[in-house]
Length: 311
Image (cartoon, rainbow, N blue to C red; front, side, top):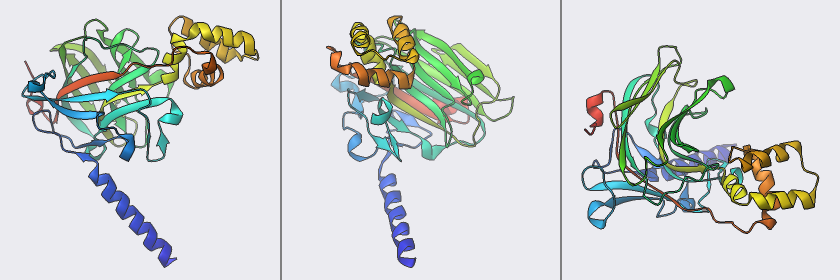
């Protein structure tokens, strides 16, 4: 028993050291107020996934001389703490502030984000470019690229009545330019909570109510692609029809998913995976475009002045 406890302690110690080694020290030029670490472990996080880049190298920069560049290519999936992106139809390179969690009270956040001119909206694949998550709980606010563009999605709990989405900027508005995001939030389970979003100094979202359902909230940002098979199914939708005709034994869910894909609508996560497995041998197109995004001025503070809002 003593040997077992010794081995367990050693393994926890080693895992703790490994975890600490993943902490990313972001320059003050690009970030302040939070500590971030790579959300995937070891070899799964590619060198090109996250980079500090410079203005004099031709990269877009919002302020100062540096910015943060994220890139996700097809196949950039891995696992973290028992979770597998690859098995769950996801790909990502993002930074997580899980060690800088918040429990209650009012905070201010800001960041600037840049979509290159050749950026492609891959909907019905869902691209998340940042989120406020809960430890041992679901995401509460996610900044996603949905069909109509850059949007906010609210999911305080996993109940349908708590789901809400709002478009913030259109697909055309985001291309080839920086836009600034400012957030004022009060973290609480009570009704006096709030979450406000300004885009380029214009109030775009003003939610009042509970802002969490668990105790600890933390921030993540980068590129997190969900539903890779949704994109591959959509660009091969005509091949799915042939697959269904030849294979037969199509479930009502699969048939409904096909109808939704034909209209470029969300087909269902698990059903999309099943359709891909069933019909991928019919597909001629199997490439998912690379996603590149830039962040700058990623700030967190207890007051608006602390986040260094750009005017």
